[in-house]
Image (tube, rainbow, N blue to C red; front, top):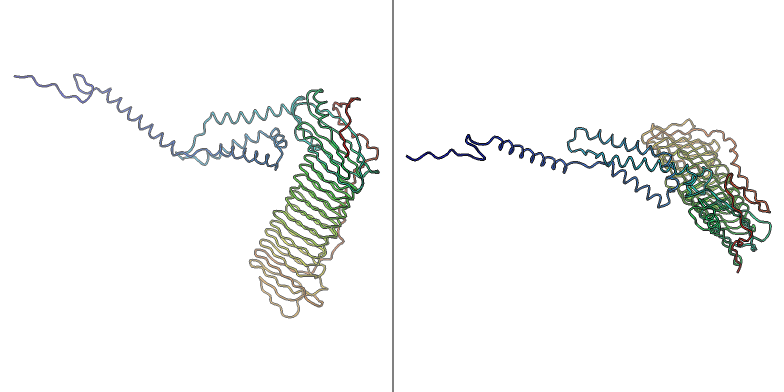
Amino acid sequence: MAAAPPPFTSGPSGPGGPDPRWQWKAQRRAAKEQWRAQRAYYRGMRRPSIVRPLVLIAAGVVALMIEAGTISGYEFWDWYIRWWPLLLIGLGLALLGEWWMQQGDPYSRRTGVGGLVFLIVLVALLGVVGKHAMNSPFGWHFPDDNDNNWRMHLFGQEHDADRQFDQAFGANGRLTIDNPHGDVSIAPSTDDRIHVSAHQIVYTSSEKDADKQLTKLRPELQVNGNEATLKTENLDRGSVDLTVQVPANTSISMKAGRGNVAVNGLNGTIGVDAGHGNVTLNKIGGACTARMSGGDFSAHALTSTLSVSGRTEDANVSDVGGKVTLDGDFLGEVDVAKLRAPLSFHSSRTTFEVDHLDGDLLLDDSDLTINNAKGRVQAATRSKNITLTRVAGPLDVETSDGDISANLTGGEGTINLRNRNGAINLGLPENHLFHVDARARDGSVSSDLTYTGKVERSDHSLIGDTGSGGNATQVTLMAEHGDIDVKRAEANAAPPEPPEAPEAPEVPGDMPRPPKPPRAPHLRVPPNAPTPQTTQQ
């Protein structure tokens, strides 16, 4: 009889059946594959961290603003060296906020420690190195806030030199000035010559290199009949402060890169293209134009027209005989007084026109105040209170998110006041007849005046005549979300005195050398040095 076949096995086996170790390995392999698949799924569904894109966007915005000239790279680096720990605080707050928002989210991003540590080390390293370089006598130098020519000087100590020269120049000529770095001061001369005094500054660690740089930085004056050009080189490590005297009837065309500009006592036209610095015009007989890229503007005692455009911090204008046009971004206060011709103002938030200003006008972040204006006043703004005193009309005023307050001295034209979100307070004199039409859609209308004839009155409107006189002046008051109050005009006090014009810079006829900054190595011009480059054709 034949033997029975061996028992069936389904894998590696021994005499007793399937091997348990093989089954355990298969289960572990299957679990591992399942874990890998789940991990790949989670990685595909996770949302990336927002911190790195925010850092990249912020760096790109700053770089773009520097390249576009909106902010100065020197000023940004100066800020960074002083306040770089704030960046670490902001980075930590961003990561903490991201962690808080992603609690319980299985798809949240876990920020890698290596990349975060590298970013922190980079920010701290730039800050520490920059701080050390600023304090080093051979490194980067940051002048105080009074030095508007520069915000950073590279590689070395300060060296300076003074140069003086003059050139014959006829009356009624035109002088073109191009000074990339340094202050420019211009005043009238007592003869028919151009007098130039230059204070040159360079930053370098070598006196030999300082001689070379000062020679390269020497101003160049070219005269061709009634046309003259005064130029200085554009050096990253140098600046030139110019004091210029010209015949009184000379016209000026100037391009100033980084530095203050002051022009006093000339009768010709003045044109200034200012980069980063303050501009002051005083006692000018010709038309004046200024293109600003930053800094304060001041103009006083001008006989002709004035036009200012661009980007300005504070602006102060008084005693101007011609039309004044202010067009651009004014980031500080605008103070205007005593204008004998119309004023036109335009910015991204505010527009107004005034025919004649005997008093003053002040514009800041929250208020527009006009006192003692004659003729038409037209204004439109957002998020500002408007206050008008000692005005007679016509008025056309509109604002939102602010109040309108007007106190009239007469009724010489139509009064039209509109407010979207805010109150309207109007004072009317007794010696003039007004036809009042006041409507407040979501507010109340109140008045303590006496009205004659037919009067239509409700909580939200008032229509009627008040005062006395001949022809009635139309008064239209419209408030969407605010109250309207019509009352008797307050007694008008005398207008305040306008701001005094600044004293003109004194430039004596002998043109003394400008004072040398303290503790700065002064390089005298060698006796055999070539004379300043001047040509006459």
